[in-house]
Length: 224
Image (cartoon, rainbow, N blue to C red; front, side, top):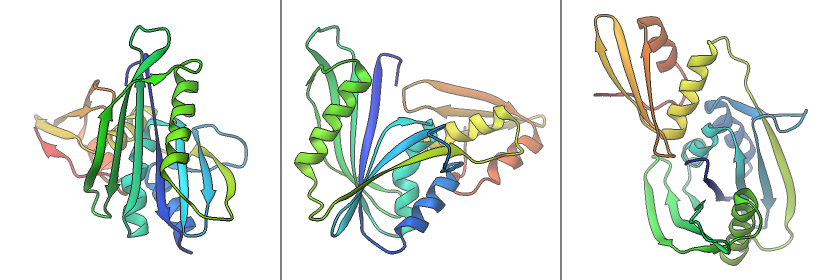
């Protein structure tokens, strides 16, 4: 995603007693936790209905883009995912938009039910346009039943003893959902294709690679 675009998603999960613990576990896998002192690394908007729970993400740490797969895995059930990306098109009244409606299985497999490229009317800057369009889509597509209890979860990063550069690399791997490694002469070249189309290349030592691979919930690397 470039600086001229913005993306968000809504997750619809079955209402279970284990959902809170599953969400905390999924966030921990992403290096995040709920914060009592404000949204330092992002915010999730939560709505609890009769049979389902809705989680909406509009902004935050890039690692949150991996939350749908992490939550489906820790919950052990499929979740519905509504993804929206808006991008500047040069027009004054509309922005380009990509809409994807899919189901994420506990295995991480995504089954796309519908997708389209349809512009959306501008309603402020890109972030405001994204938020308004995403909530409008959710309200049209998702019925939670009554009563509905609304809340918000402020997030912060978990403390880590790893160097900042490795923490950043781990967040990017989680967001990408994949990474590759080429090993040569004791050095490991890591390549990550980022969700915004960018590419991250890092050189790791043996110890660095072991530290990265030791992170819970991180996908295994492929050989480049």
